[in-house]
Length: 378
Image (tube, rainbow, N blue to C red; front, side):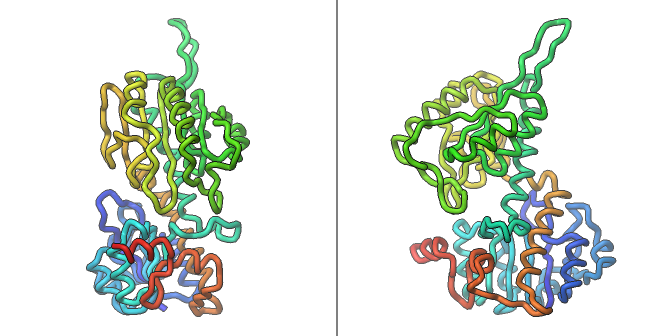
């Protein structure tokens, strides 16, 4: 079987789906590896490094994909790349299927079996394949550093001959993987950190990292969804949430938002009125900008200055740390692909929770329910 690694073609995407190390792992498991020339350059992996690992370097898309059984990418394929795929091949990438309906439909026409690393179940067995977590961890870390660079104040408490400088106040909205890493990083920089999440069970994790947990009283498990993800809350809860966030953002120097509901637009948690209620010089880093943003004024991949409040809508922080981001993502992909290979043969066990959960197209059908519903109505 031949696995192909394509060069990423989206502006700003510096990651790669396989490193020389994971190329060797896949070869050791019985695959032949083709790597499009230049695929690893942005993450500082040369063609020679892939060649030394046993990969074959190919000059362009068509030569890389011709006869390939498995295609590995970070970003979605272009429609031209889909046309170059062999019918019945396997495609793996970090694809939000509900946002790429045209691409999903084209893949079904070519009877491609599509897997999204976005859909990997969050189970103990699948931890080594959990690309969302590995990339969110990087985003949470980098968001604090970027936020600190935007700020006009120190992060830590400083006692100087000229007076005492109080620590910056940091609010993290959403205590998932990105949020928890942001809490830990801001705490290490000496900030005064507090965090909010609709899931009350994350309180212990937040506090263990040195932050104060901002609570909203609720009788039910309002924001607790399947698999530990957040879910939408009631109107009454949302009103309480809005008041609490308005109160806390007004006192914060840096706000980092990370709230996402899988497959849906990001919930708007900070409206224009809240932004205008914040102190001039405050900063918002919106990690949900890719899906519309948690702040009403966020513009994807732009830094906005609204009446002295900086709103950073960078959508791909992992690509700014491409060496480790590629290392982790490539390992996630390698673990997933190797999981499907048994005794040198690719085995698509449709009863397997991980394989079935990550699959979104197979034999000309859209197998992911939410994506299928959207495709049917589009």
